[in-house]
Amino acid sequence: MPSPGRTRRHAARFDRQERGLAAFLTAWADDVPVGTAQILWQGCAAPEVRARFPGCPELNGLSVWPPELRSRGIGSALIAAAEERVRAAGHPLIGLGVDDGNHRAAALYARIGYRETGCRYVDRYAYLDDEGVRHEGADPARFLVKELPKGPAAA
Image (cartoon, rainbow, N blue to C red; front, side, top):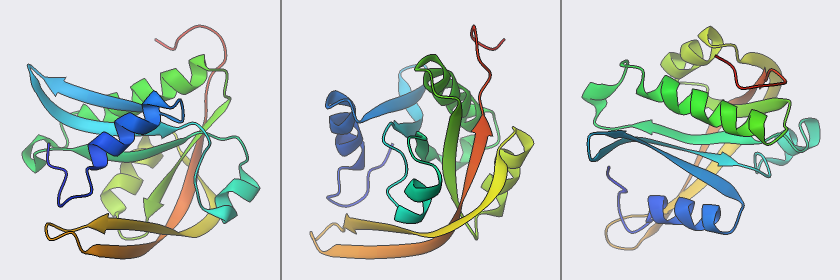
């Protein structure tokens, strides 16, 4: 799976996992990684979200690659695995952000039980391009949540 430029996105996610700050999930097809996601145990970095949902782990960085593999259940399987880990860790709620322009993802999240909260924020991020130049991005987003069942693992 690509990790464009010099950002080393996957390595950074693995490092957060090693420090206990996240869980880095990878979906495989045979011996090839085809999807990733991470659970940020401390929640969303946006102050607007932290104020409304303190202690709510965030599902972040969901990606399926290559694009031809999308809409085949890989993303849904990553989401289900993340939800189970969060539930098993004793959290009653999981959240995620969705960019305003990502209608396809928003439809998936609604279909599998995530609800709108009215919590809007700007998703800020930075990356290094192939020449090592830092770029910053900011996308309008909204935070969705899903209540997780208590008790044994969901079937």
